Length: 263
Image: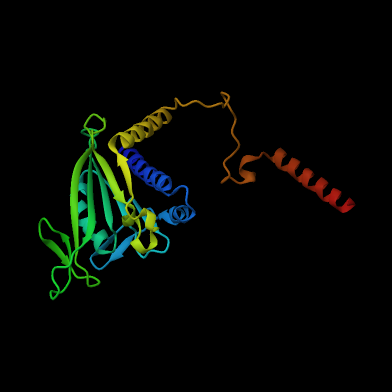
């Protein structure tokens, strides 16, 4: 499968599970269902701020929130090296949870799940608060909104090299990370969206098989062989009709006008 198709399939799988699981958690109560309806995928809209900007592969935000709560990056090759920097950009601009699905494209079907989650931490009562983005290497200090923010990164194998699920591996996103807590119904404060490796791989493998079948034109359809298709809508009528046809159209138009005059 081409890299672009693989990238698209992974992105679609993630977005499908987020919306599906959110609706499952929110079903049965009007306030929760309204909340689910207010969460939107803003897709590739650029996230901008003081230390740079970038357009993610997907981003989920509440319609009243200033910033997206969850951002997705699908990466391979060179982009994999940029993931910590991208997480830094997103989180310093207000994102709470960054998910990266890092694929080992061309060599295997392996996918690494990498996550960064914002945590608020106050150093002391007197020390000025700051925003710390890469706690492990202690780099990337950036002051913002009088808050010290610590992002924790986590890496786990989400799909093995042969495309099979990794037992026990799962992605867990707290609902309060999708939107700010004030916008989340109280009954959802302790709930999380959970996507297991088994579920994700099953959906992803289905998407890959579907693309392969359609790519070699082996899908089932009911179109008769040797079907004649109409001209492209972008073509003008004069480009697709003979002189005789144009004359026929003129006669039909004149007849139509006569009928209208008679009325």
